[in-house]
Image (cartoon, rainbow over all chains, first blue to last red):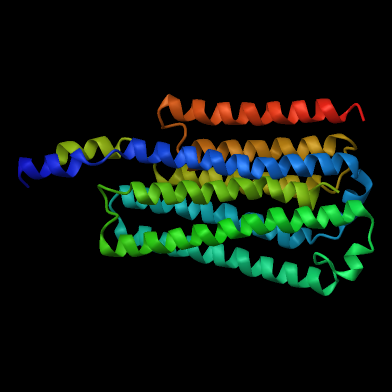
Length: 206
Length: 98
C-alpha cells in the first residue's frame, strides 16, 4: 500500500468523534426515558396502593426471562465487536446474528405477555380497565407507554444490527474500521440499560 | 499500514472479561428477582434500584467501554445523571408538601 493511500484512509476518519456523537445522542435518549421515569415516580408516590395491586398482576417469569435475554444479547454484541477487533469476521458475523435473534426472542416474549394482558381486558381504554381505580389505570398507561417505547427501541436496534450484518458481509465494517459496529453496540447496550430499570419498576416492586 | 493498526487495537480486551461481566449481571438479576419476594418494607424500592444501578454501571463501564474512553465521555454521562437526580430531588421537594 502506498503512502498516499494511507493519508486518504485516515484523513477522513475520526472514530473518537463518531463515538462521542453517539454518546451525546444516547444522553438525549436517556432524558427522553428520564421524563417518563419521573412521571412514573410521581404517580407511584400518589397511588402506592393501586400500583402495588396492578404490579402483582405482572408475569415475573416472563419479565425475568426477557431481562436475561437482553443481558445475553448485550454480551453477544460486545463479543461481536471484540471478534471484529481481533479480525475474526465469521465469529463477529455469527455473534451479530445471535444478537439480532435475541432481540427477536425478546419481542416474541413481549407479544405473548401483552396478548395475555389483552385477553384479561387490561388494554388501554377497555371497559374492564377503565372500571378500575385511577391508580391502576395510570399504572397500565405507564406500562404500555414505557415498555412500548422500549419495544420500539428494540425494533430500531434490531434494524441497525441488520444493517451492521450487511456491512460486515460487504466488508464495509472490517478489522481496521469498525466504529459503525461500536456505535450500533452502544445503542443496543442503552436499550439494555433502560430495560434494567423498567424490569424492577414494573415487575418486581409490588 | 501496520503502524496505524496499533492505534485501533490498544483498547481490545479479551472475550473472558465480558463473560465474567455477563455472569455478574445474570447473578444480580437472579438476586433482585429473589429478593423481590422478601418484604423490606420501604427499602424494597431502594434495594431494587441499587441493584439496577450496579448493573447499569457494569454495562456502562465494561460493555460500553466507558472505562477506556477519554475522560470527557465520563464527564458527559456524569453531568447528565447529576441533572436527572437534581430533577427528581426538586420534583419531590415540591410534591412532599401536598
